[in-house]
Image (tube, rainbow, N blue to C red; front, side):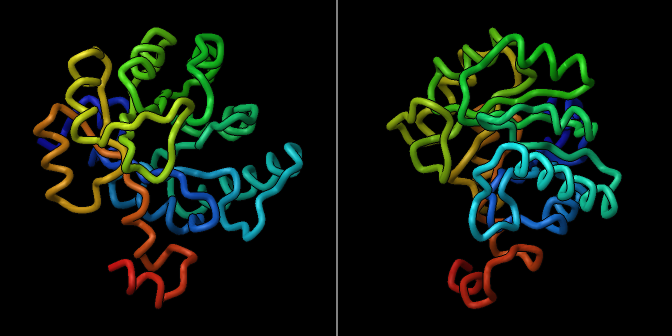
Amino acid sequence: MWNTRVCDLFGIKYPIVQSPMNYAVTPELVAGVSNAGGLGTVSNNMQLDIPISDPKATKEHVRAQIRKIRKLTDKPIAYNVGPLDPMVAIEERVNVAYISLRKPDRLVVKELHEAGMKVMYIGTTVRHGKGAEEAGADAFICAGYDAGGHSPGRGDTTLFTELPQVVDALKIPVMAGGCVGDARGLIAAFALGAEGIAMGTRFLATHECRWSQKTKQALI
C-alpha cells in the first residue's frame, strides 16, 4: 500500500509530503521528514518572525536555507514555489516544486521539468486539478476547505467530499492535503483514491518545529 506513484515520482519511501508552513519550519524539520522517508518542503519565509518583502532578499534567504538542509540530508526535498520566480530552486537543484498561490502555467512546468524537477500543484477544486494536469504537472494535491492553506480560488467543500471527485477526474496521482493528521486520516485518504498526503499542522508538534513546547503540547 505504501508504494504508490507518488513514491516513484519523488524518489521517496513513504507518500507523505510535509506542507510548507513558513515561520514554523526549520532546516531540521525539512531534513528530518526527508530522512525519515517522506518529502520535506522548503518555504520562502521559513524561520522568519516577519516575512521578507524584498524578492531579492527572499531569494537569498531561501538559498541559505536550502544549503543548510543539504548539509543535513541527501534525500529529495521540495520547494514551495508561490508567486515568486522558481529560479532559486532550479539553481540549487531542488528535486520537486510544490506550487501554490499561482495558476497552472505550462511554460513554468516546462522550465522546471527541463531543470530535472518534478512538479506538483495544490488546489481546491476539480477545475484546479484539470488545469494542473493540462499544464503538465506530475501530481496534484487536493486541499479541502478544512486545509490550513489554499491555492487560488478557494473552494467551499471539505477534503473527503472533494477528494474522490478529483481522483475520478484526473489521470495523474492525487494527494490529499489538509485534514489528515494521523494514520486513520491517511487510510481514509487512500480509501478515497489518494496516492499520498500533504500534511502540515501535525508536523508543528515535532521537536524540530519552532513553536514553543507549551504550544506543541496544547496541539497534541
